[in-house]
Image (tube, rainbow, N blue to C red; front, side, top):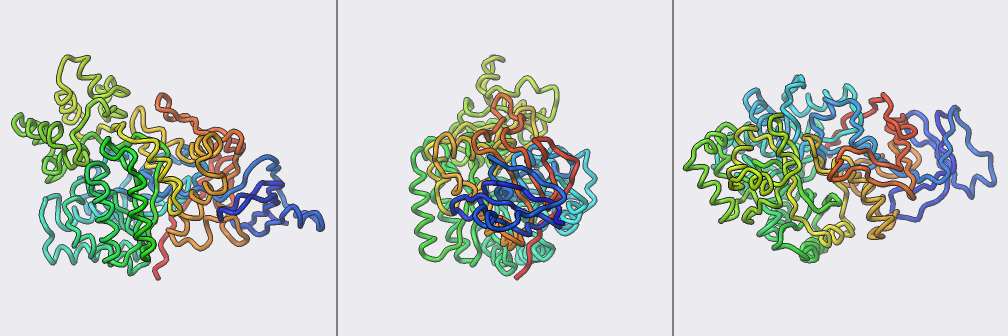
Length: 536
């Protein structure tokens, strides 16, 4: 007798085709049988050791978070309800060019400092890995949801070149190629970049192209946070399209937004650029989160020259009055590359988290508001935060446009990615709400996407990008990574005021056929493992 039969579910199978009513049988971590209602009328219905009545619920493949920052959270927090409760069964880590493998002792310490705002300091983590393969092995000890990994190009450059703004030598470029090849052979699914973050931003296109050639040899894809989402955004997108076409490498555009006032209403121009490339044979996909504000670290706003040399060098510059005034001028008058070429507007920069508890009064207020309350300039406030918090301050950046968000999510190559930072007192609600927000707000309330379309965006399309032959669809023989949700009530619980509230309307989530969420509650099951690239 089979392990589990889910009865009378409305199956939205990830293909984009209309839903159908069926009994779905699960055994051995796989979907072993799907008996549609019409077929069930003429034959004996399947039986199992356990039966789950899914009347009124949609059964779909588990959601794939194509842009996650859970690199340490999966190790730190076995519960991980932030993602499990959303119906996420697979996250893609190693984003934006900075993560924790491959490293040596020096670069591990530097990276931990540089992205403490994303992932915490890591003082509570045993960093018993150095290579990509060792990190994936660590995940395989048991995690809440499955995880795939992108090799972070900035970390690779830090290891081979350092944090300096210079071209790599031929020997250093060879070293980077080897590191990428090793990481891909060990199971990474591709390469990420953070081209507004140091040191990845110092790489010229020729260097990135060479690394992408290696990725393509292993069947992976390139996932850039490209050089601008503000002034010059369209040029930055075009640069990535041309670069990957030259390298023969598939392209996945991370958090593909058009932000800041200069890009209001310009999403159709981006999609026209992509459609032209797709028509010419390019292999392109993208992800977005269904919100207008962005989220990153306050230090990311600094001009690249201020971050050159790594976190310690940046703090030294900020502590020097003359240099700090140069930084202020670049931020407020010139438009730093860290702020996407747009002069910073301090009333759009909301502090979402600090690592120093003494600074918690700043959280939930914009830099402009905190500065006014203290009778000082916004730069004085921002500089105090950067130095005292050792660059660990996280922010929400209120620079997005709703019409751009809706336009981009309708595109056929669109997928979902939370870009969720789980650190801070008031993180962006996308970390806890992205997937139910798509289903509740943009499907049920606004009708921007049909339910079948939206599920395809969140399941089969990302699985295809990741080249996963047995995930992303409800099919016999596929892995039983599935979610059951109520289309009438599913919604993000998280808000900007209360960002860690869990969603509603998602009573059951299974990974490998095991209940991770059951009757709306997190179980103690750790069914997640690494999902590794299968080299071509």
